[in-house]
Length: 415
Image 1 (cartoon, helix red, strand yellow):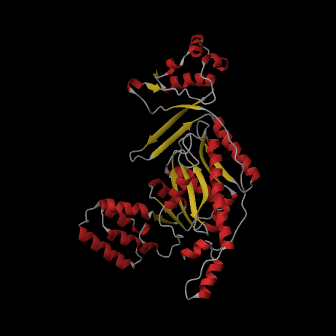
Image 2 (cartoon, one colour):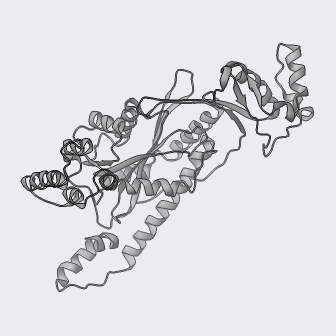
């Protein structure tokens, strides 16, 4: 991993926009007697909801009676309307929404006994996904290094999606020795988890290596994302990865990147220490460099002192000690990363550009805007390093001067 003040060129993608309206119902919201209440939002910003103005565009159903009902429906007739099955609701609103000028979507969300999302489906109109794929295809034509892959589900809709542009792939070639990744939610209208793979650059600032838009959070999906990521990065595995301990994510990492050293997020562990034990001794075991024998001695002493021999959490953490204790992680490069806070700070930054109502096309455009802002900040760091020089304060002037010439400003102050 390079910490010197090398630079490289950047490419910026123009931002385009797309508009669409959508009305959604969720079959998970089942009421008694197998009925689904469906409430219609009549606040479409650029579409008239007067049936008299819209019925000319309505799809003509085979049943004349149904056709007659559709074109004479008023808002009051639609409010709180109920159906005996999802099929009936979908058929009715497919007809109705076409005439009103909006689209419909059916979601499916399933969790296992541990609360882990195993299925997340959003069968939206293909035009949304098609627009996104067209956008990415156009990007790849303008930027030959732009990489993206996606899968197709059984129903023909878009499945998992991964992408990384030239700059991100270049960053990984320089700074890809350590990586952290996490999921964030409520960033798009499909309500799919967004996985962000991040690292640290020579300014000690967070950089993004790639994105993944997932259909669920299973081992298979995470494995696909990691395999596709390696394909984009010419098979180069990171030396180390920091995660929050998600089971599916951990299994996928062990399978796809067996040689990569995993580290559990210290911030999450410290919170768990306060919740389950509540003593500073265990935090010291986690963060203090010590020999293995010293670690074992201090650990056993703490367990006996606080009577934690039967504490299940303590037993579990001892079994995972090689994933969090500095004693066992010594000698592995982490680039200053001990937690997933960088991933979470990037999530917070992206939330300024993303929200749950964004169509996929606009979702991608807004991510490009966010990436431009991040890279603008990196340009400023490059400028400051080239044009400003730190004040030398130690008696080792020659050594300090050499370090100031080799390292970027932020890395110099960090060292």
